[in-house]
Length: 213
Image (tube, rainbow, N blue to C red; front, side, top):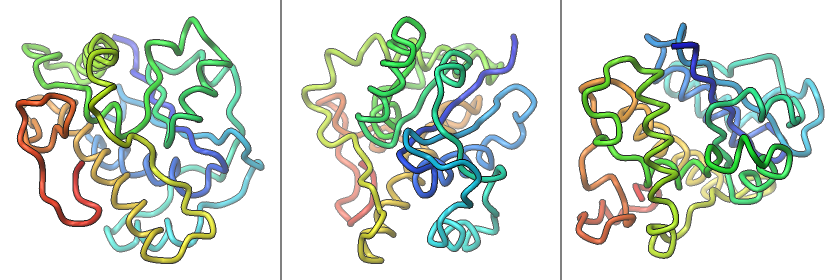
């Protein structure tokens, strides 16, 4: 299969999308030749480095920011993406406006996709790019039925927020990325408790602040 391309989107491409990009790249580093991850912002100014809070968060995990700075979301970026992950619904909708045919069934928020995708979508598929494609199809197929009971799917904009809220935002992104990456890696599936409220029969996760879902 050709490489599977993931585009992560937020507003300024300074906090949420560069963090998700870097974490997802790291989680799937062994598949970097077949899964390509990039990010952009709906109002980004080109070339601005990731926010200090993101750099610090990544450093605490032994990582550094990816890429060379922020960039603006364009139609071409959406057209070339196999999956668009927005920080919030406004970013998902921005991608769909730029490319309705391509993005309508391929655009989700981070948390929405993490809750909708299921390991059974890719059962028997070992190739990580093919697994990712199958997860997108499965998530898109169940979105309408699950959306009414999914709860909050946005990650708040941390710009100007107090440090505890910024940290909670970054942790929410990390949790969503970890679940998505676990679904993509063959044989590495998240626990059913992590699936969140998309299916009523699934037990809720821990009630600690910032934990899944």
